[in-house]
Amino acid sequence: MLCSARAKPYTDGVGAGFHIENFGCRAARADGEAIADRLRAAGCSDQKFADADVVIVNTCSVTAEADREARAFIRRTRRANPQARIVATGCYAQRAPEELARLEGVAAVVGNSHKALAPEIVLGLAAGREQADGLVPVGVLMGPMVLADELFAHSFLEEAQVAPGAQTRPNLKIQEGCGNRCSFCVIPQTRGRSRSLPRAAVLRQVEGFIGAGGRELVLSGINLGRWGRDLESVETLPGLVLRIFGQTALARLRLSSIEPMDWDAELIGLLAEFGGSRLARHAHLPLQSGSDAVLRRMHRRYRPWHYEEKVAALVRAAGPELTLGADVMIGFPGETDTEFEETMELVRTVPFGYLHLFPFSPRPGTQAWELHAERPVPARAVEERMAVLRTLAAEKTRVHRGALIGRELEAITLHTPAALAAVGKTSALTENFIPVEMEGRLEANRLVRVRATGLTAEGALAASCTSPECALSALVATD
Ligand code: SF4
Image 1 (cartoon, rainbow, N blue to C red):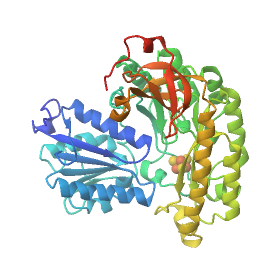
Image 2 (image 1 turned 90 degrees about the vertical axis):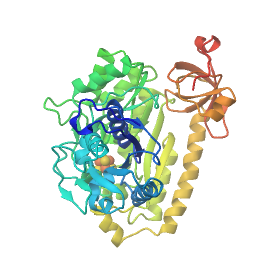
Image 3 (image 1 turned 135 degrees about the horizontal axis):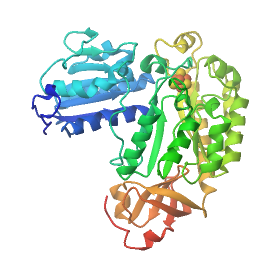
Image 4 (image 1 turned 180 degrees about the vertical axis):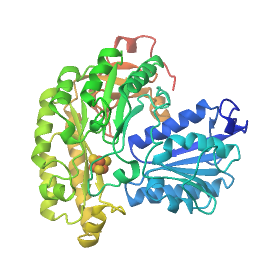
């Protein structure tokens, strides 16, 4: 477990193994991967949390449950590995740094505002320093270093090159923060205003990814549709996608979640032009509620009919093979049976391929925290609504995937779990975001065509490979 003594003076030749535990959304995971990449580049090695010298807990704070999970992991680390220096970072570290600093074993709390400094703080701790050189903690409580403020001056982790590795289809986070003020959301507090990775840096990353053998790249952000609006030469996401297609040989690009009103005619037009070839026919539009009144209380910037219009335009552009996904929040303060039924009705109407369902969780410092104090939805009603919506969502997923049986689809092979490999199959993901269990063994990161033959018990597409390479010696057991 060696961390080399190279460039950075604060490493001082001290050996270190690190473990990073990521919680939360894709964007948070992308942050975690970037921190880990930088530590590896500095010569540190991955370890299990029970053996590591430094354990980084990359927290989420989107719900009270997410906070609890982070605290539980820190306690577990403390028990299993009392010598470890624990660094808490991420959204919880930004929202309530003192809470985390009070936990036993925590050596540093690094909010999103200072996340870009996390790797050097870890290296400093590995070298036995309580404070890495040149860093002035904004608060020190009984020992732990606490770095978190509202300036977000050190929050972008753009330097680590994304490459296919443990993740065949990594995320490239090109946008951070959010300037919207949805009344339930803690993100404007935990990640600050919207900031964009400059176009030149994005293109460099894409070139580097291709150079490292990458095929499918996921562009992600906290509010991805806002990419470019804060740049000096105001740019747009569709313009960036066109540049990527025009100036690089990237085989496939996937866009992660984009707010409904950011799906403008230009972006939808890209799906008509490149959908199914270089651009994945996959659109994730957070819905949250199908009730006009609830959306207003949430301060969301669209009404249910806007949402339906956007979906209709997307399906016209990309065809019925488009996989549509959404987040839906259940039990927002004051949600009545009628309002919930409006959500059910909208979900019935829209051809969703999957839904992510979340119970409302009050977050301190948000407007909805106070609304919840005034008009909470009883926990029992939330559970019942979650159950009926879960059943409807499962049915919609089954119908969407079932309609693909007999079709040929583009897919990318993934790292296959051992149990599946043992029965001679390969995991893959179709261009339109459907998990596949493919006959035959193929290494990860191959672009193939598959013919869907049915659905597995878990709801994945069962498929055979129709690419010529599958018939040849390319079928190998490598994972
Ligand atoms: S759009 Fe709304 S829900 Fe999404 S990150 Fe911004 S404030 Fe939060």
